[in-house]
Length: 438
Ligand code: ASP
Image 1 (cartoon, rainbow, N blue to C red):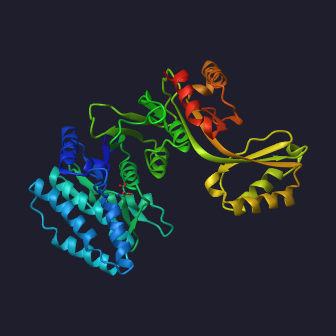
Image 2: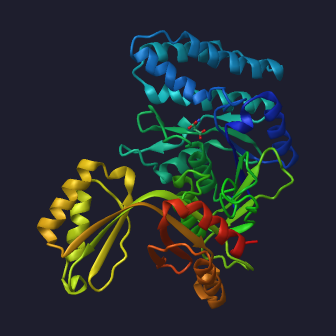
């Protein structure tokens, strides 16, 4: 149903009745038919998210501790919502089921999924919509992957034309009907799956931010909203630390060419960011964004004619793989290969063992380890074929007076990635942002 809009509301949007009223206005004001909900999030800074409370309760029960506090906290939060909206619903049986599953502490997924289950039940009543339990259609295979075909069949047989639905996020069920949850933040994925099953026109993800910003506002005060970008650009920015959405959610939407609209429940007049399929050509008058991360280490290998030695890069990569370290980048030269990896994967032991093995297998002329490296990426479709944009980036980079350790134009041509010393990270991002985006 190409004209349908599927919308998902996150935990902050559902944290208390005041916020839920905002959700109600958005949904009913725009007659949205399919609504996916998270479990209530924090109402204030020190508050506990419902999902965290369930996880704590489960862990306490498992280690023989008392979980009454967690159970009561859970119960009170939903009863408060039910009371404030004067809902006539009897949740006794659902609470009892949760209590026994907590006590029994064998079914983790069931317990942690209850946040979304209760949330969807109540929100459905508040909106006057049908409640649809995600366990009745989102079907997981044994490898925890979702089978879209089976899920679609089950989904389409349940939904009726001209009916509206509230669907619980974050979980589904395996073929035997046991509850299976996604990883944390997984209601984004549930929403994306429903959008794919319906072949929806747009998937709206309602959170507490206006959309994707062109830079991290903690680093660049004037970071502005990106109104339109492609999935490819979004991926480049997320990869460098600009994470707002669950990556699997993006994967489903991107593969199915569904437009994603990131919106703010607390500022609904703002149109948010639109993420368009990669084949959709956008008119963008400037670069899209800048993102970066600290915490990288470079292992720099020097060996005469390394470039010509067949299979040597594969050999280095295999050694690194043995230590479960993923490689971020491999800049190469005629006599050099540098491997850039996240420092957190390189404990003292791992690093020493790896280096010993590289010495043994590759016999380098020299090997250096460069610590405290940050990666920065400037992203924009314009970089692909607009030579002026590229020139702007390089001009700004050289005027920033930052030492550049390595520099690389991404293989798809839409990003320029470079490594700088960590201590210059903030200064460089700020300088580049002001030169390129302001
Ligand atoms: N409630 C789950 C979590 O906190 C899933 C979600 O909110 O998307 O991770």
